[in-house]
Image 1 (cartoon, one colour):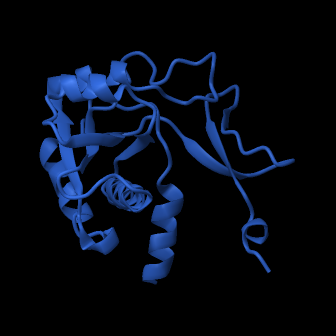
Image 2: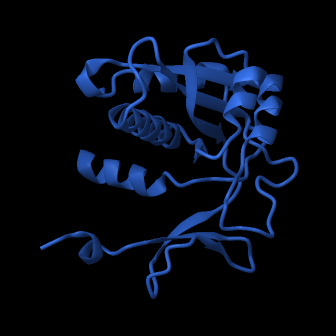
Length: 194
């Protein structure tokens, strides 16, 4: 029973790029998401990750420093007036450990846990690796020794994102003429090696 629930949450945790500004994600909710992520495994249990929660008016400073949906050259995302209402910036504390491939795995694990927990609470988001790191550090007054590793844009989604099968090897996400967003996923047989 729990397995099926986990599988459903994973399938429902999509990358959303349009949000309902009338239903913002609150600072305290993001704080709970970070509290959940701090239980994640960490390479050598070093726990070098820190988190900067961004909510309210401060969130407006983050959006222009991010780049969204690289496959779409002719669509502005998020649409005007549909920006995320909060962000969690995952930071690497270099005073704890240097940045390594292992610490990048820590970032991925923590980010996915946050996104899964957000989906379970009725929120959605997008993991953004393409952003102006120096600009973000300055805009958010990030202390020295903390390096922005990943931006999690969060809010209440106001778009539909559907999973579809990969056709002819094409994994690029796309939108149809109704604005529905489709994300091709490889079949189970394609990902199991025998």
